[in-house]
Amino acid sequence: QVQLVESGGGLVQAGGSLRLSCAASGFTFSISTMGWYRQAPGKQRELVAAITSGGSTNYVASVKGRFTISRDNAKNSVYLQMNSLKPEDTAVYYCNAKAEWRPMYNYWGQGTQVTVSS
Image 1: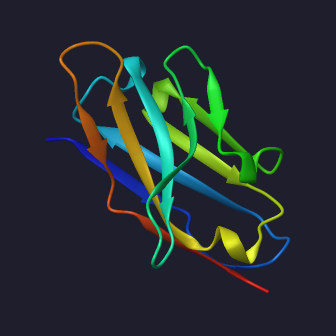
Image 2: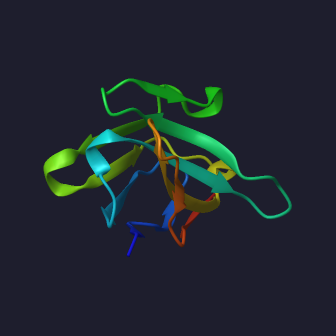
């Protein structure tokens, strides 16, 4: 059974930091691209950051220099360190796992709320 369990969300003041964690199970984590997406009320879900099995990363422009994605294959976990948070970062953050090879898959976690107060 595939599971992606996020944790670490919460309420923080602008300028503060949070670290999101996602614990994965039920698939081969080490060969998956892992990502963090977010969805704010009334907006489409967007990719925030992703990291490939080889460690290559990419970020949406609005978080570059503030957020860092990392992974620990030994713990089947992916992290998102969020610094200098802004009110516009407020959203539900979702962990995502995508296959890099066939058979293809695309898994989602249940989401964790991040609220940044001004």
